[in-house]
Length: 223
Image 1: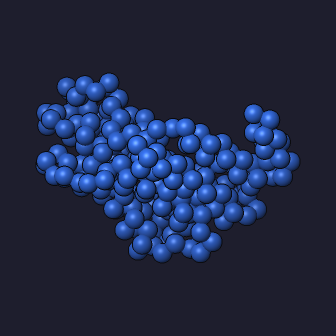
Image 2: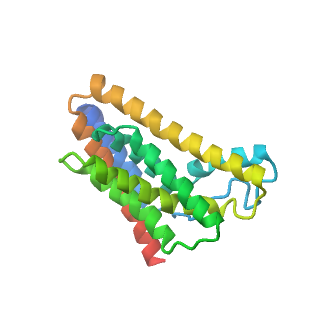
């Protein structure tokens, strides 16, 4: 506790960049105690029985899972560092729809939890690098990560009727694109107007997100 308080005081006295790093340290520390989850059920494990329940489940599902949610944040920030911009989260969402469809079609994808948590660690690493990530490689990362995340999302809707199923997929698409675009927009304004060293800020975020992803991945491999 004393260490955390001293870190916060240090961040406040050394500008926005250091404070961002302090917050990243808090995120990383909390990640050491968090448990990743393959499938998060907004309805307590019950399948959606209506279009409304399907939509609400789809909207809530990525938010309830910290590994999923943090990856969406990472994709939004990575979009700032590649020329394709918001096409990166679009590639992720399309890959996710493909992964969900594959699961719903009774396909089997191995090592899903490893793929989900490992994708967060890898996205953080790419964001933390000094060199600019390659757009084509990032689009590939987004699409492949989407397959694993989408497969996990498909678990919560497997066996549902068509109407709640489609509304669930719509909810997933809307919330993930919305969160990624919001993070992209806020970070773009912050790096353009509020931060002296925008690359440093993004790299701090990458270290925090990548470290948290590695913590999640370690928990999966150890469990």
